[in-house]
Length: 292
Image (cartoon, rainbow, N blue to C red; front, side):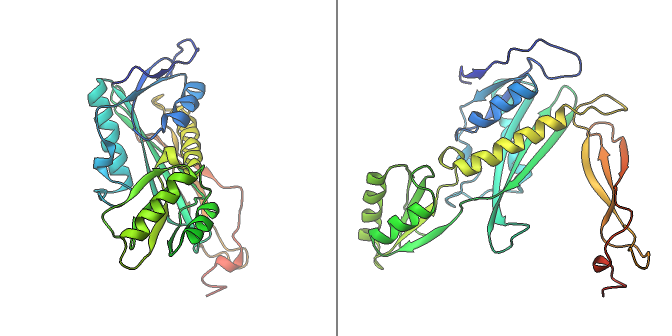
């Protein structure tokens, strides 16, 4: 474990994580946004853990596939960090990319944070979904590569270069300046029989400020969950866990697929509270009877 820590200035108090040591296993600079948020909002001391190559659990460059789900990967990272550090509380982050839920033609970024507290026997999960610069191109010249790089936000956002196509086993990453990028493009074009270079955005956190911002938002969501205590057992993490659908149609009164209530549940004792939505009726356009 490294010596790097982020120490808050708050005094201990009941029902909180003030001054608790928390293990964070990362090698991609995620502590830059996670640690300050949790130090400010929770008062905990995030300790960066090293000694394990997290790329072994999966890479965005596709040379190592991720096993299991996004949550599985985050949980495994947190557990490894806790084991290496000997701490009873751990946190880990895992990102995923796919179609944006609101704009299906555009890519989206889903960032997941898991908090494991073995003292209380709880896991708390927070998620933030947002925009991303995830993109790629197949360039036949330096000029085409340069145009793509500018559109992708380079050099603030890093790039990865491969010869031929997205499946070529050789690649160069960590590109963060124009001279290095040009050298990599010339290398790829010279190595490719089809004289093309596959260029893609580097989605590692430290190389992608847009993704880093989504991780920060997930950390804020996590802190909100951890500062909300269960009214039954006082455990942290009492938060939204689901919805009850069936809001009646404004015209015919039949149940629709719209939510009529939210379910807030404890992660330890399973106590739950039903919170009714303010809307009494759903628009008829959501009704299967009025609008089949």
